[in-house]
Image (cartoon, rainbow, N blue to C red; front, side, top):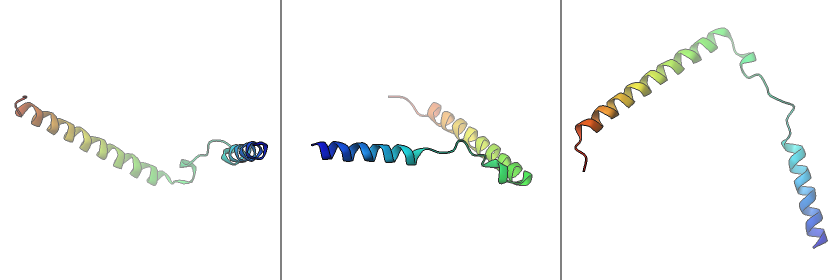
Length: 67
């Protein structure tokens, strides 16, 4: 029982020490300005498509009679 507990504690300490990171990293730091602009354009396009899909779904739901 003591060996199991000791092994469990060693595993817990090891997993905690390996899980630690130095802190937040800057992912955008290595991207160029044009890459960031392209990402923002794609994001806005995707959000517009989602809004259109939501509106279309709302119209379809109004057309169908509820039971």
